[in-house]
View 1 (cartoon, rainbow, N blue to C red):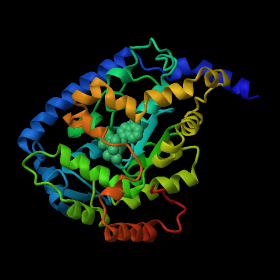
View 2 (cartoon, rainbow, N blue to C red):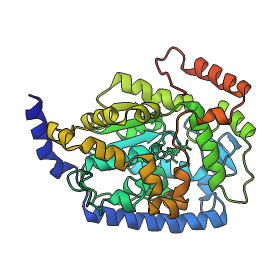
View 3 (cartoon, rainbow, N blue to C red):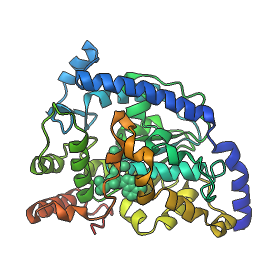
View 4 (spheres, helix red, strand yellow):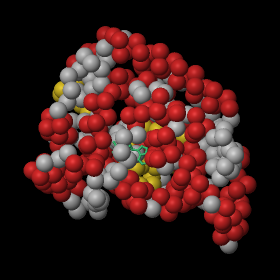
Length: 368
Ligand code: PAP
């Protein structure tokens, strides 16, 4: 029985899952265009190029000090930068879901880069063999995962643009940080699947704090750990409050497990192979017995591991998302680094907050 199901899924993979080079080329062009615009933005300030009407709308929103830009605005119940709002409005207006679309969702610094690498490699494993040691043309060896699985809000719909997605092969694979409540209207089509990766809020905070201070422009003053921590606990962080972001996807995954798969960063760290198999089954491309025997699961896990990705030249010296250096995406990749940064009273405050906001929901974390 297992064999029959596995065989039939193999047959469908070459038809549904393989991107063609036109797509990679297309993503490359989108990337270049995005880079040009981002450079301009960085030179001219984060609110450069916004229309008068859009600025008026921004002025009507509650705002707080931003982490990396001057302000974060409260838009549709979550905090985000002006440019992200512009892109999200365009996405919500124009994106047309197709059956089999895959959407990777995270709050920033939860392991997005890792999940993009795993999903891309998994879905494209018949075109790009992850096992062969002579396989030197695997796209992951020369492209950052963010260039293989584009974000709606940072790439495709950036600056309010409307991309031409007609050339993308099925299943199209996208990523987003948009909370579920603001995403759901755009992905309500049978067969569209969402994979959410969650990370414990302690490590997510520390990772965010490091990242933002690494990439922010010199004109923005650094966010101190204490200040960032206070903002984080008040929910003021990109796409936060974090508890609402996590709960939105958590609840949907309980209600519709066939639509939303909820993964945890700590679980992936502990047992990547089992979680990769879960991901493959959820996406409708389970590993066959033969693939397991050939070591495909291990090969994908190894190819996408922190150690492997971090040492690649493309991830050491190139730029991808929003023209920021890829190397900042690979800092430590560990569970519990927060113990090196948070004071006992900060840890207590965050624990109480998590208890208050998530207690009783069934959503729990491992912190070490
Ligand atoms: P993004 O939201 O900006 O895309 P994201 O990839 O979600 O960032 O988060 C980066 C974190 O994932 C970093 O964590 P750290 O700051 O605690 O080190 C990064 O090291 C970690 N990370 C990146 N790639 C991997 C990987 N292959 N395996 C495990 N962790 C990874």
